[in-house]
Image 1 (cartoon, rainbow, N blue to C red):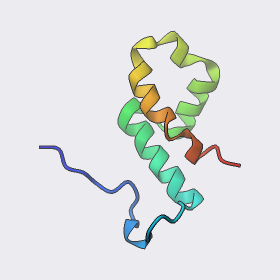
Image 2 (tube, rainbow, N blue to C red):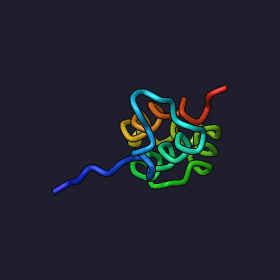
Image 3 (cartoon, rainbow, N blue to C red):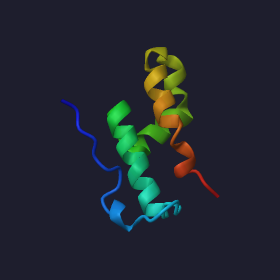
Image 4 (cartoon, rainbow, N blue to C red):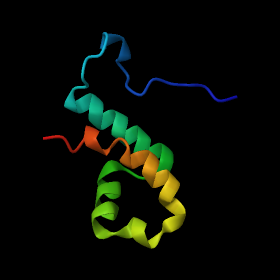
Length: 76
């Protein structure tokens, strides 16, 4: 049976609709990249910039799940 786990370790500190800190956002993104693509954030960004995923259409659904979170680390 699948269980849900918090995306960030100190989720009790978040109250209401507060924004993530940069560290929390990076932690959430790292967990998503590891979960869906089994790679680290730096490895993912390198593959994304190199066009790796356009050569591997079988990863499209997994990639979409990670790209949804990309604004967390590419803000500002």
